[in-house]
Length: 361
Image (cartoon, rainbow, N blue to C red; front, side, top):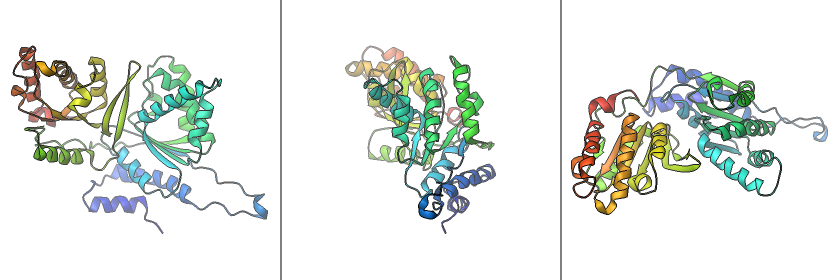
C-alpha cells in the first residue's frame, strides 16, 4: 500500500525540507480524496460489460490563500505522488497561451466554434489537470476559460487549481464581468473550494541577512546565485512564465511561486519598455537578474532599459538579487546617461539594505 500524502508530508518535515504547518496538514485530506479516487481500480465489469459504468470522476479542488502559504508546494506534492497516466501540471498563464495559440490555429480552418475542438483535443487521454496561480485579468481569457473548463469537465477531467483569490473575486471589476459569473458558479459547483489560511508566509525571511548583490561575475558568483535560487524556490516546480502585455508576450525564463529568474540580456537586451517592466514587477515578488555587464555608450539602449527596469522594480518593492560585473557606482562610468544612472545606482544600494530585503513581500 502506497504512503499517504500525510505520511509523505511528515517525512519531508522530518528531513527539514519543509516546515510542518497545521493549516497545510488540514488541507491534505482534500488532495488525498482526489488521489484515492483517481488511483482506485476501475469497477469490475459484469455480463460482458453491458451493465457496468465508468466511475464518476471526483470533484476537483480550488485551493486559495495569500502568497507564500504553501499552495503550490501542496499541489506539487499531490501531483508528484498521484500514480496515474494522463496527468498534467501547468502554470495558468502558460496554459492560456497554449489555448490562444490552439484557438488561432483551429479558427483558420473556418470552424464556427473553435473552443469545442480545442477543449476536446486537450482533454483526450487526460484525467487530471493541475493549474498553478489561476488569475483572470484579461477579457479574452475571461470569455474563453469558462466554456473551456466546462467542456473539459464533461470529458471527466479533474481540475485542481491554486489561486490567490476566492472564486467570487476572480476578474473582479473586469470589463463585462457579468458574462464571467456563470464560470464562477461552475467552479464552486464542480470544485471543492478550500482556503489555505496559514498566518505564515514561508518565503518571508529567507532573504534575511543574505547578500543580494554579487560581483564580480564568475564561477563563485554563479554558484552563490544558484544556491540562493534553490533556497527561495525550495523545490517548487520551475517553468517559464509568459506575460501578456498589450497584445505581446514577454516571457520570464524561470518562475516558481512568485520568484523569477532572468538574465540581463533576457530583459534588457530585448526591445522591452515600461509597460513590460511594470508587468514583470507585478508578477515577480522576487527577481534574480543575472550577468549585468558594465554599461556605456556601446550598449546604451540596453543601459536605458536597465534603468527603466530598476525603476519599475523599485516602485513595486520587488526584491532583487543581482549578479553584476561591478559595484552599482562603477557599472556606468562613461557616455551619455552617466549622470542619470546615479539615481539607479542609489536605488540598487537601497535595494540591498536590510530594511528593504527584510520588509514584508
